[in-house]
Amino acid sequence: EDIRVIMDESAIRRALTRIAHEMLEKNKGIEDVVLVGIRTRGIYLARRVAERIMEIEGVPVEVGELDITRYRDDRLAPGADEGSNAAELPFSTRDKRIILFDDVLYTGRTIRAAMDALMDHGRPQSIQLAVLVDRGHRELPIRPDYVGKNVPTARHEQIRVSLREIDQGEDHVSILHP
Ligand code: 5GP
Ligand code: MG
Image (cartoon, rainbow, N blue to C red; front, side, top):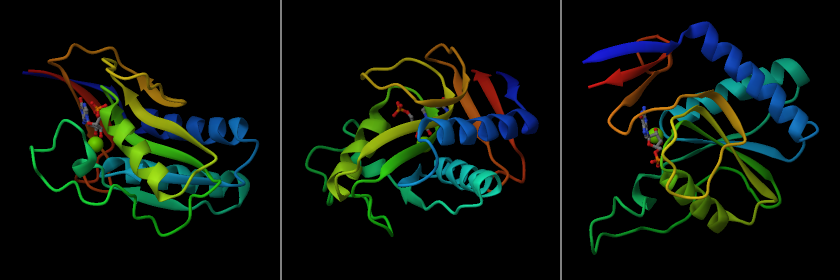
């Protein structure tokens, strides 16, 4: 087993600051924009970017959470209860520009399921995607609008994301070769 750090604390901080600026530029400000973080680490990334936007623009931006585990098409046992396929967000997303946040983008299946849940919640104006790491190996026609770092990986490799809010106060991204 071999672990190598590919983003340290400053690299993560700079990447999120850059993404905040890119979001503001692409959306010509922050009007109608809401952030939605995919559990668990996507939520912390979305909150950090919302803090940056507050610093840059002086405007608060809403942040919601999405738990997509049960909506994944390939993780449902036959006959299992799918539940209602809708996001439970504390605000309306109708006609909003939603920016989805996740830590790692891989096959794209989680994002497809997230888009499904968001569409059922109320028709947004648009959905954009921000990820800290794009590790490749897409199985669906999905691409991120904002990327912290592109990391070409082999399928057997794994990305480890530590965020200070939940990972012993440490911020770093590593690649693990088993
Ligand atoms: P996908 O649905 O695109 O195949 O996988 C993305 C989801 O699985 C994300 O929510 C991400 O957290 C998790 N994931 C997939 N591959 C990795 C990986 O190499 N490292 C980490 N930390 N999470 C991954
Ligand atoms: Mg995840």
